[in-house]
Image (cartoon, rainbow, N blue to C red; front, side, top):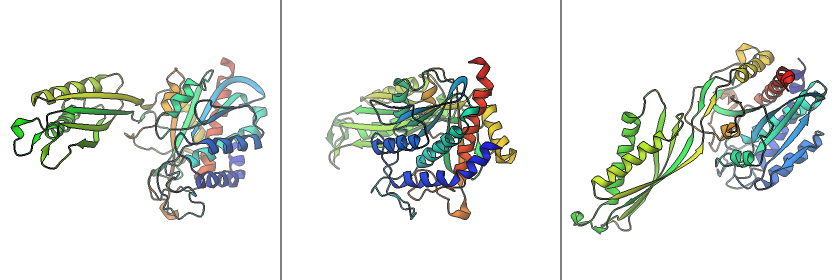
Length: 394
């Protein structure tokens, strides 16, 4: 098969680019040099229809086939994390306190590999492949910025994958249904009344009220939520008080919600419980709620079929793996908010024999680099197959 053979031939290129980008990570919102280097890499491949973002870093490039057809997008995120790398790799980060600990360097490399394959096959390509290099995934703002910039205009489908540290190499997963939960953020301001710690009846203890709110929020999960709907409510930060012997008059709680439910039901129930719990003690609590990302749900049967068939056609049915649904989040599905169907998969990167045993975001996270050309091949195959299948609809 041509794509498989090309991917194997280009494997050294893909690995080299991965190592290059791994060594020079940039944080969310700072991806200036990364974007410039990606642009140069695309131009070196002969891809020149490149569009840089105006308000954020990142870019997209259109690779035009020789035959008419639709537009399919392949998305790779490009930002790094504020993690001090301790992998010991010879190509480890040269930027102190910054690391591609989530594997986005691999996403860049696989996307460039897919671009190299598709550029080689453009005479057989029906339509256009839009190569989307997205910034600021780690802070859940990059996809929306690109959506606002019109990157998804005219796109008929969008494909994305993530390398995953707890998923064995070389499996690739495109399971249907729920894949990753939403990420919502919230803050709770609790207003009590300060008093001396020896006379608590003279004040309203914002710390005690906050503890009651945290406990009550878990009742939202266990008693107000449908148990068939996964839901996590976590208060991760509490700030309160000025002295050890004074009742806190104010407290601030910050946390996150992860769920596959849509709408405002969780927010509404949280607000009711928070306000009534505070009121029971004579305090006042105010909830601020942010809808940061939506869940990633593979709900399009055609895209599921094309993606799974791409894996099977290239590497056999034994290459398809199953990664359980997770409550972690991704902003990828934002690219589908205008109605564009999407498919999202996972490429296993765990290989104990090569020391690849750490999960994403770990300071020693590394991948089995033999997965990279396979990820590039599947992306290219998906694009080719989708465009060929839909050419008559264009």
